[in-house]
Every structure is written in structure tokens, then in C-alpha cells.
Length: 303
Image (tube, rainbow, N blue to C red; front, side):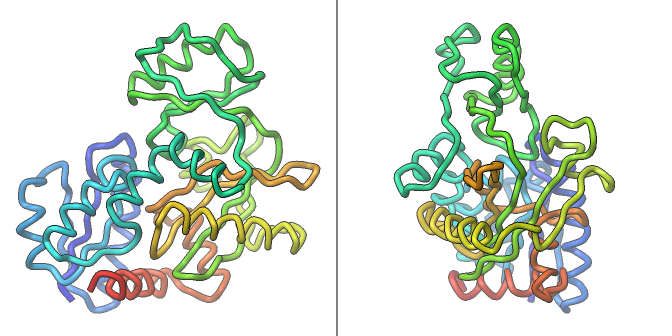
């Protein structure tokens, strides 16, 4: 097939996208496809015409564009199938505050939160007990995130977010172990347990993408009941957000066995150290198998 691999973009996660694209490009070639790498940051105006000539588009973008649904909307106009969520579901999932509304509506535990905009300003009152995470309401890779332990540090954390995003999500810190749960098609993949490297307060950008950044164990060494609970909640969240193909959710497991869903990613990372490929490998799917399966799902839904 004639495949356009869409990567790069203009978000703060551009470099992560390009790193993952190299591995995907290699896999697509090995699967026998003709691949054209397309970077919307360099040639956005030609996306529609290029997509009309392609058999499939593989999207490997993080943040906006990509996870905001813009690229998917253009591909829909071109009649070009692609993997993962559609435009509307992508936009909803990228907005952390809106997603948490959906989680709560479906009875899924999520940490208490507060939504803050520049209109309210850096001096808005903190409504949650410390410590809290302050993070961009849209975006990923933990970029722009702060763990605030003192009230006097709250305004600076908001400034950090507002420098890169028009809204902030303030979220109550829940101590515990981080688990990720992936969905592939209609199936829940094995959980991954993440332990940040010594000295790190949380699973930040360096932990996520450095080769020795964190210990990631798959399948996660947790009780089977915990695994079933997290996977069930992930399936509910995936369906409630209207997602398709695949997704990955980030959870916290507390010492008392409670689980909290933090957010859902519609275009999970595909770098050599990424979590979804690791979970797929645990059920016998090589990286090339995973790429082929994602294409199969995308064509089945939009072909």
C-alpha cells in the first residue's frame, strides 16, 4: 500500500514524534508498504491532496496537531483511512478536564481536580489540598508539569503552564504506583507498572524517554483482581470517550488497593521505550505485528 507516515508537527512533543516515526517507517517498509514521510509543520497545505492519493495514513503525532483531531478531520475529508480515534473523540480525550468529566459520569475514579484559565489568573485560589500536580490541560509527555507542595509555589506553576497552554489542570496528588493499561481493538493488553528512577518525584519527560529513565515491568506484578479492575475501567473509558483502534490510560494504584484513572492517550508513544509496544510484546505481538494490526483496525473502520 501507499502509506503516508505523518510525524513531527509543531507541538512541544515534536522530537518524540520524529523519534518514534523512524521505527514505524522501518516497520512499514519491512511490511512491504511504500512510505512517504509527511511533516505537517513543513508542508501542511499539501496534506489534503497527498491523502487523496494514499491508501492509508499512519499518524504518529503528539499534542496538537494530531491528538486534537485536526489531522484526522483532514484525512476524513480526503477519504483516507488511518489508525486510532476519529477527530471528535481525539479532541475530547486530549482535553484532560473534559475527559475527567466523562470518567466521573461513568463512575470511574479520577483524582479531584480544578480547571484554571488565564482569565482567572495566576492568583486564583487553590481549591485542593496540597500537594497537587499542575499541568497543561492539553498535552502530554509530562511537559510543563509541576508537583506543587507549597501554596506559595502555585502561581509560578500556573505561569509555567500558561506559557505553553491556555488552560491548566490542577489535580490532587494521589500517592501510589503508576500503572498503564492499553487497549488494542476490543482487547485489554497486560498492565505495565512504572517506577520512576531514584530521586524523581513523578514519571516526567526524562523518565519517559531516557533509556534508563524508569523501571517498567510488564505484566505488572499486581493482584489479578487489580488487573481486572484496571482493564475493565480502561475499557469503559475507551468506549465512553468514543475511541477506536487503540488507546492507553494512566492509572494510580494506592496502598489500599484503590485505582484512579488520570488520563487517556489516543496516540500512544511508539518509541523504542514506549509502553504500548511493550504491552503488545507481552502477548506475542512484535512491533511489526502491532503496526500491521493497527492498520488492519483502521482500514476495517474507515476503509
